[in-house]
Length: 68
Length: 270
Image (cartoon, rainbow over all chains, first blue to last red; front, side, top):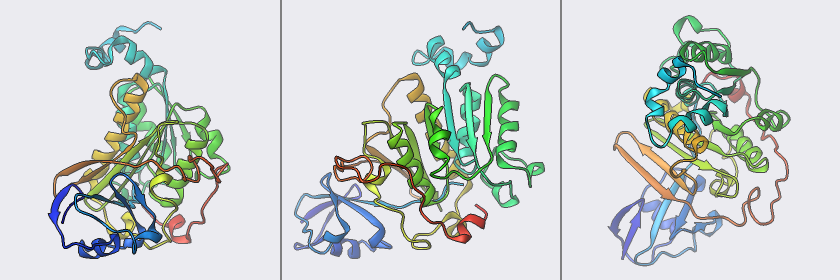
């Protein structure tokens, strides 16, 4: 299936959950990453169960604490 | 308010812009912007807002200038090392533009003093370097219905979002609560390329200016991310969040509060 991940269209095997995608994309500290799928936030507690389907658009939003 | 000849010359490149003009320049001169944190983000923001003739600029910071700040905090110079950052920033801003008033707040911003601090300002710029402060500024601004620009920078990356009253989402809609201390790296641990503050802090100043003159589209509803190594800007649409504890339908946060900060956060350099 095709997913748009962080703006890039890529081919993935079917049956992916948000958790699996975080692993495949080697996202650091996934427990502190905000995930949106098709313009909806996915609660952290739902990462294991939230299934992705063909055509979904996924964004990873990261904490960025610096500034001074 | 009539412009002096000197003001007409100083602001001529603004006044010639159809989006600014005499009207917009007057709006800038009559506006008040508060910058919290006179560091990597706050320094360029303060310089551009002072140069632009934002009439009153508040600058809050409890810290003193350290040699390790000078790689990015371009408002301070080598002879300023040891001086309060608020004082050092004020001197530079007034040297650039004697037209403006700079209010200094040499203090930590806390739940106790933030409502009073932001009350007199039209727009707030978050130039802080830690999550407790970023969440505090978000909550206080949402509750007081103040527009603000949030930003973060680390390594070769930066990001920002703008909140305006009733034009969510807010920072807490996206990031529920601060991560535990040490869970995600800070600039001090991970480093930051100096020019990153220039890029992102200048974008924050741009948002403040656009808000004041009422032109263009603010970065509300989006997170703008910048990856310098990939030379990639992305404007990511943010979903709404009705269950946000501060700006959602049934808010549980009704007044600003402080998260505990670890001792090293308070003591450390930035």
